[in-house]
Image 1 (cartoon, rainbow, N blue to C red):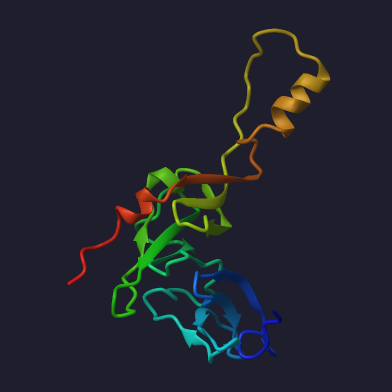
Image 2: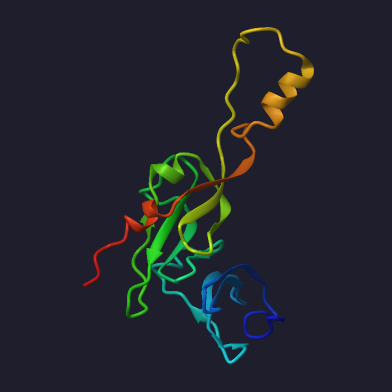
Amino acid sequence: MIVGEPVNGSENSTCPSLTKNGTIYISKRFKDDTEKLCRSELVNGAYRELEILPANVNALKYNFHGAVSSDESCLVRPLFGRKDSIGDGWNFYVSFRNSNGQWSDLVNLGKDVNSVMCAGAASFSPEGNYFFFQARVPAKNILALERKQSLQELLEKEIRNPANGSADIYWIDAKIIKALKPAEN
């Protein structure tokens, strides 16, 4: 299926995330130099006009990398510079969608996810049981070796080892996210 207007068009559309029923969530660049997280429902094989998510989800001038769960119950996105952030960098936050289609305020995913440096794109497994995210674990300098090692062994340890300072993909049980959901009024 080719995704045309209004999802695609004259301005940049990135970071697609799909629900079970085909609703698509994207980061959309607008002519006023903002980027907002939006959704578009799939109806009779065509996408409807974009719905810009509310300001409590689109918390910055540039909003991107939103990942929606397949049942559309929550959306996770990275944010930088909030008072409740863990560490100095980006943190992942979640907003929950209630039965009336309203989105909750963003909640920090906590140290189980944000103890590493958030690096961007995230996603949920199709059934919603797992959350995948890209992050960087700071490189740790080795001050002393237990034994002499060959150059190949050192390269394997430094280059191929997760936590070498480059981005890797991690996953957690989505129960951690679901436990953050506020009680619905």
